[in-house]
Amino acid sequence: MGGFHYYKDGKPQHPLSPIDVLELVKSGDLVPPTDEEIRSCSHSDVMSKTIAILQTLWFVVQVVARWREGLPIAQLEITTLAYTAITVAMYVAWWDKPQNVGGPVRVAVKQLPKQNSVEEAEWYMRVLFVITGWQDAHVDLRKERRVPAFYGGSTDEDNYITADIVALCAAMIFGAVHCVAWHYAFASHGEKLIWRVSSLAIVALPAAILAPILVSLRISRLSNSSSMLEMVSFIVFAFVFAIAAPLYIVARALLLALSFSTLHSLPSEAYRAVQWTLQIPHFT
Image 1: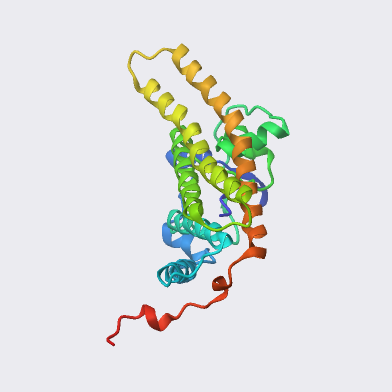
Image 2: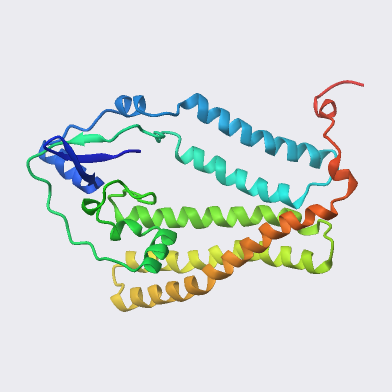
């Protein structure tokens, strides 16, 4: 969104982390902008977001109408339907988030809060951190010219765990939508088997990753829990994640490939348009 930027002698130096901003607010060195001021810098409003959601939901209405008329629905439409669920959820989560803010909030103070040292990580570890949502812990904004694309900006470690749980649940819902095409006609039995196995995989694999996270949370909240149990739960999570993540990527890739490959063998009824007059309540 542009964020907060530290200025010195009228020149931009580096972005400020949410923790820096909170410390400056507590010390009285910074008066944060109001919600109205932030929204005034946004290039998106309620109307544009509403139109985007209505356009997405219109596709869902079309799919439902085809199902009611008994018309076949292509596998590519099922895949798109799964993405619409994620799209609507994203817009709900980002409803109050400004979009394409033109510039940051300029912060000019005599002294910045002290910051803990940040460990440098290899490129493959940075990719892993982005996937798991822990990338902020290895980003030093004071060495950046702008806020990185995947920077989350959370001030609470529990927020990362909550975000991971929500993302994994969303991934399970995304996979469950693909199971709608369980009994669809495919060009071959092999394609149908691949679709079924891949659909089950993108439901089961996120659940397998979620299970050790929930167990670890349960262990950490027990008053008599030991560091050994927490270490064991982390090892189990790392082991499951190392196996499940590549399999999930493969399953998603297979489903996407099948969504397009099945277009060459669609039944003729798939090209029929929906008779919308039949969907409107009427008397005959």
